[in-house]
Picture 1: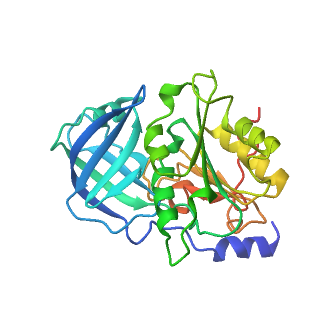
Picture 2 (picture 1 turned 135 degrees about the horizontal axis):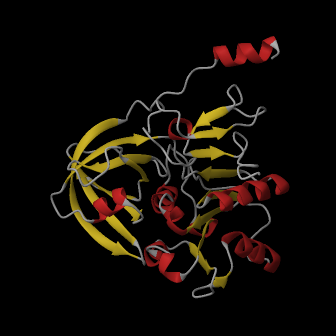
Length: 299
């Protein structure tokens, strides 16, 4: 390895959990069914939190033995005063335990963790959000924050925020009506044609480009299945578009200790001092200038 590359690795700072992360006790407030297999879990931490940037996440588990010992990561869906909401797809033991909470169930939160979306300021090309299934979770708060402005940035106009939301069928378009009530442009699609455009979000995006319903220059944000994110990255590179991906990686600790969520970096990118980034600490949101998912399924 060239001496310069060795120096870059040795001199790079190791990523660390964010300074505002903490372990908090909490109580369940409510659990509301959402879609065919989802719930919205509303919790109240023992200590109130300042506004949390959209697409950051919390590690979450019950305090009793119904939850696995290792908590699970969930993007913050909504923040309402002292309460936090999480959109959860019920899949295994951990999510079943959370879906079975009743008012007052004791919970443990660790967070807020990771890095969220960039500030979605007004001006410039439209922000086009691509959501696949439960990948809609980090977008609701993101739209709210864009509309009111963050970090001193100008608020985005409703017409400059577009959500393309896709799933296999209509029952997996979780809380679609809530997104529509935000007043931004929402286009739905399903693989089986049960609601909206028949096809996936990238096919819908291509259709909107071809029809002139969207300008060719946009800024992309995406969250969903890994193959969808791989395709989004490839599209952004081919067209020279700014693009950010919120990854749904499996995590063990959420704070950068276990090294269980590596993401390949681009040697020429801002994280290129190391061959891999930690999704939990340096993500879950990454610009495609920093990481690459290409070849994740090779062989």
